[in-house]
Image (cartoon, rainbow, N blue to C red):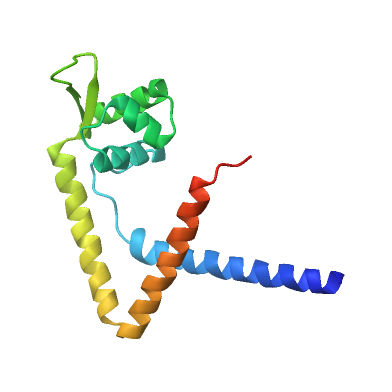
Length: 159
């Protein structure tokens, strides 16, 4: 019985190692294949994550962004202050309630992010053009399964 358990564990470890290896290859060849633009160079991860949360929820209140990121509003306020000083984020007073602050990316950073997205998309298009339809369909299917499983895991809170 122990041999069977060890065999199953080995198979699971091997699959996990293969997934880690292939994800690492994808990240290196598709995500980290380019130097970040000067505006985003040396951006700490929490600021990078905050910038993307603001991009995805532009015009939302600081409290809403804090909730989305799972941060306290006071902690987010410090991160936002650093992003404001870097020229990445602007605080917009709410026209109805001046106590409320809404967050948006600056137009310059929006243009930088759009440029990055277009370069990545163009690079990815050149790669996908080298695949046959069946291969690209399998990639989409595998990525969808991985994304759905990971998203489901995120929604389950540890006990």
